[in-house]
Length: 120
Image (cartoon, rainbow, N blue to C red; front, side, top):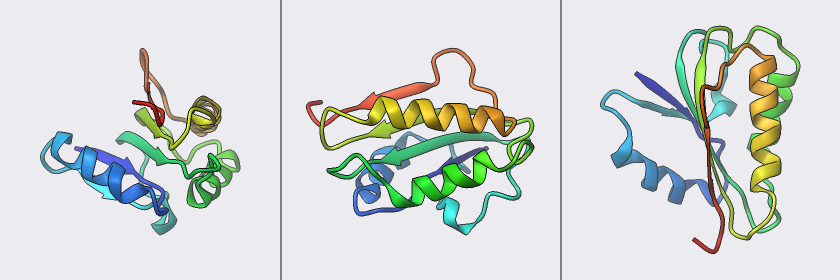
């Protein structure tokens, strides 16, 4: 089973609609604002939709929680999708997300990042 962590903002419904038919049966899409406590050992997909300014407030709250824990994602394996309205900020957000999740116990195998900028 795959758990998708999708921080909510006004751009996240479009990302949710894009991902839903591609996910394996039984996948769980959840807003990280609802909690990150029971994720240890799971397969994760971080899906972040950025607004026009390259921000997502819910994402930054999740990032803060990950940075304060060394074991929150112990044993997890993950990938990452970051979408943006413009051409900027997706790599910065992805780099920060991978670093924080890795420090919290999550592994990223191979090339875990998919970047989708506004010009796609």
